[in-house]
Every structure is written in C-alpha cells, then in structure tokens.
Amino acid sequence: MKKIILIIIDGLGDEKIPQLGSQTPLEKAITPHLDFLASQGTCGLVESWHQKGKKPTSEDCHLALFGYPPQKSNPGRGVLEALGVGMEILANDVCLRGNFATINEKNFKIIDRRAGRIEKTERLIESINNLEIKGIRFLIAKAFSHRIVVLMRGKGLSAQISDGDPKRVGVRPYLIKPLSQTKSAIFTANVLNQFLRKAHFILKDHPQNKKRKLPANYILVRGAGKFRKIKSFSQRYNLRSAFIAGGTLYKGIARYLGMKEIKVRGANGLPNTNLRGKILALKKNLKNYDFIFCHIKAPDNLAEDGNFLGKKRFIEKFDKSLKPLLGLKNCLVVITGDHSTCSLLKSHCGFPSPILVWGKEKDGVERFSEKDCKKGALGRFKQIKLMPKIIEMAKN
Image (tube, rainbow, N blue to C red; front, side, top):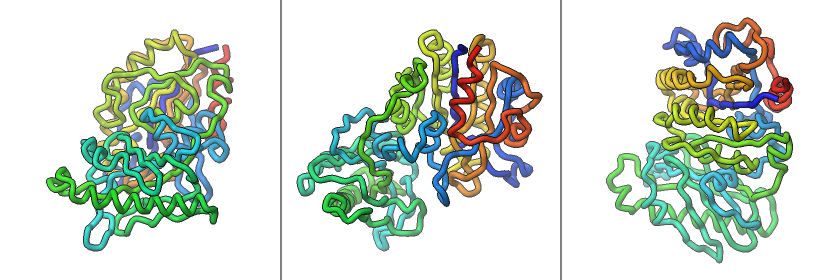
C-alpha cells in the first residue's frame, strides 16, 4: 500500500472576485507545482460537511475529512482547542474556545472580534487566569494570536450552554444561557457570565490595554464541550498516523484522533509559517508513518480579513514550497481544503473545495483550481467519503 500525505489548505476555495478579473484567488494564482500535480493526478470537488442552514466549521469539516461523522464524534470546539494547547482535561471539565475582543465601553457593542488580531497576550492571560467563582476555577491558556482556551474546573458543570460570540460586530456579546433546564446547565451559564464580567473589569484597566487602539477588553466564548473517548485514527484504518500543524485547533483534532505530532520549528498557523520546513518534515518522516496530515492555515485567516490579494500571494508561496514532494515514489499526495472561505463575505461559505490526488491515475485536468477540478474524474462528492476513496486509491 502506498504512503498517504494529506495536505489541508484551510479555506482554500473562494468566490469569484471582481478585482481579480472575476476569478478566485486560487484561479488567479500562479501555481506551477500544484498544476503539475493536478495534471499528473486525479481531481474533483469536495462538498464540506455542515449542519443544515449553517456555515461549515473547521472542526466539523476536519472530522468529516478523516471519516468521522461530526454529529457523533465532535466533543466541542473548546475540547479540541484545549487538547491543541496541551491542557489536561478532567472528566467534569468544561472547555470553551475564546477570543480576546474589543468592545465599546459606552454601549458594550463589539468593535473588533479579534482585538486587532492581538498576538502578545501572555500578560493579559496572567491577569485573569485561575480566578475562582462559586467553587469553579477558570484556567486560561494561550492558543495563537488572539485566541485562548477557557477551561472551567469544579463540581456540577454542564456543557449544555450557549455561545457568547455573535460572530459579528456592532452588537453586544450574547449572554450565556443554559440549553437545558437542568441544575448543572443553569449553574454553568450563571457562573460563566460572572467570570466574563469579572474578566472584563480586569482587562479594561490592564496597563497593556491602555496603550492599544483596539484594547483586548473582553472575551468572546463559544464551543463548550466535555472530553469523550473515540476510536483512534490508527485503530480505525490500521495506519500509523502523524500530523504537522501550527494552529491549536488542528493540533487538537489530530491529538483527539490519536495522531503523533511531528514538530516543525516556525510552524505557527500564521502567514509567516515555515512552509518549507513543513514540506521537508513530511518527506523525511514518510519512512516512519503510513499517513501524515499537514495543515496550512493562513488562506482562511486572510480571506476572513477580506485580503484576497494576500490569499492569492500565500497560495503562490505555498506552491513554491511543494517542490521537494515532486520526486516521491510509492506515495499518494492529496491536497484539498476543509471548506471554502469567501474573501468578500469575510467568512466560511458553502462553495465546494477543489481536490487533487497525485500518485495514481491521470484524468486530463491541467490546472489546480475550482473551475478546472470541476472537470476531474473524482467528480463532486461529500467530505465524509474522502478517506474510503483515498485508501482504496493507495492500495497497490
């Protein structure tokens, strides 16, 4: 059986941009290495998994890509983020993803959901870490950039609570509400609201925020969950698996599935991530593993900021890093996205993601793009079908 490399370019697909001549960033990008792999492989379009009426999420899409139905296997974004930063999670802990955000002190409306994508948050975290309210300890850990993990530890907690992040600006953060009328859900929502108020009063007067145009004076939380055990990726597919990732969520998903980490210096989930180091590490570690997942985050962030030119340039930069993979033998290289991220909407969107599979047959597609992959032999298929397809293709 061939070795498998799965490279996920987060938010790869996009809408057609008028300023790019009605092309997507990928269609506009100059990508000779991706085009070569596409022309020597098999292509198609992948439909991202999503809940009815909602936009696709990164965690659901990745679980689906690995063949795990999200409705049965997703423990909550908070749990995956906590695993990603290396936090120990106890049985009764409730974990949430958090964003440092900027709110207007006068009307309490959100000005910026990411506080200007603040990166140096260590001192802010220190000021609110280990607060205790009604017997519940709040453990705060840094993720990357503006992101944090909020872990609630104590008795009587429930993950059945709503999100505080409205995912838009110009409105107030949502009050956390119980999603069931159980004593534990009501208690959890109440104590979390108290923590968020207390954290706000600490953050708004923090010396670091006095110097910032967009002070990180509030925490937007979402994705409450409790840890649960599932069958590991290696057990499920009988493949020795590993991962390379900079973003904490993607580390967390891989750890949740039992994959081993291949560490790469400078792999940080940002546009300046060490792309060449990731690709070289892929190549070097193939002898030790049957399946390696590599995550590339920046296109999603750039599109969410509306930076379609930056997304195009990053895709070109990624393409240049691929050269060391072109000489691989007895290996299947799969490149796709988890979901599309629309630069004009500045959010995840429902367009399918292009996919190429190199190392088996050729189907005559010449370029790697949404438009060209639409003509590929793989056709258009649902994300949950990816693993069965590539395992079958990897068989000699």
